[in-house]
Image (cartoon, each protein chain N blue to C red):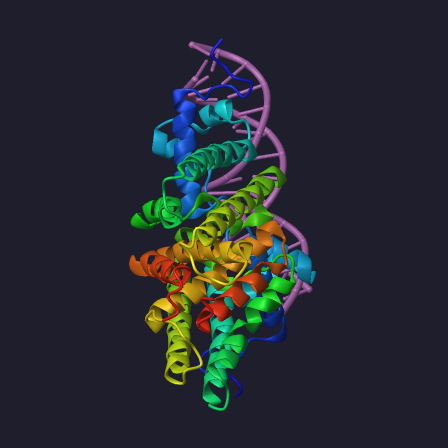
Length: 200
Length: 200
DNA sequence: GTCTATACAAAGATAGAC
DNA sequence: GTCTATCTTTGTATAGAC
């Protein structure tokens, strides 16, 4: 009586999802295994197969949960009209800064995108949808900022959104590789200065 | 009598390197195998081990060749003082546009960075060095452009370099995932407009 | 230099006991 | 729901013939 059409995950299933997400964010999809998850949780591989019959299904569940949470956050940010557009942008960037605090994590979908051709088809589609959703959301915020004269730039908002999104994903990638914690901070500060019309 | 300290690769070795590079750029390091290369070249796995005893050594050889070629290109671009700084930047971006023309390739080091924690240590170091070299090179070009008043922006060149580099890497990642060929073009146009002081 | 054959480990996955 | 046991495939790697 408690299950929705897409049934509630049990506690163990939740733990598996969390572990799998962390592993994909740090090592990638191809390089993580049921064994890794089993070891970390102190259970057997077979138990994971009970909750997620195949690796593809596990991957899909991980991305769906991640995208759902992110989506809720985006909606809540955009819903509060009191916020300035720059504040909304700051809120958007928060999760990226959370990842950057760790030594080993990038955006889940950024990690998956790195090996997109090695992914099951359903997983690929979801990463693609994630990217498009985020760029569309950013474009809206940027357009809003232009209208309210909080932002000053000449490009089309949709194109500026592509720069912002790509720069965030790229910054996480570079940051994790070089280990330089200031990579993301530098990039976002320059970006924000550019959005404010700070050409000089 | 023809070998340097780091011996000349034979023709077969060259073919293996090329194939391996293409496979890493499209599928990633973890997801490509000796079998893939063997199939594509019509040879046996064991023959590849003759040229490159381990996968790690093959990976290192691929990155070294890639970085060496890129490095030569960077030096040649910067050497010609007649060029405007924007022209130098355009030259820098050329390889990215070549990758973007394909449906499945990103920068080799961008691909490797996506699974950096799953890489052998020596490979990791080389990807890190590649990133740092490129960002340093970009910082120099950007600083030159400021001095010559070809660029107009208020950020420190090193920080702007981080934005430019991350945006290029990110744009390739997004482009391959969404399949939208204009992703890189849009990002570079916005970037260049920003560098020219085009706040509005 | 390339081949066949083989070793060995790890991966994803299933059957069936508890 | 979790376990043991097992299957199958694939991956990396080596030995030795040609």
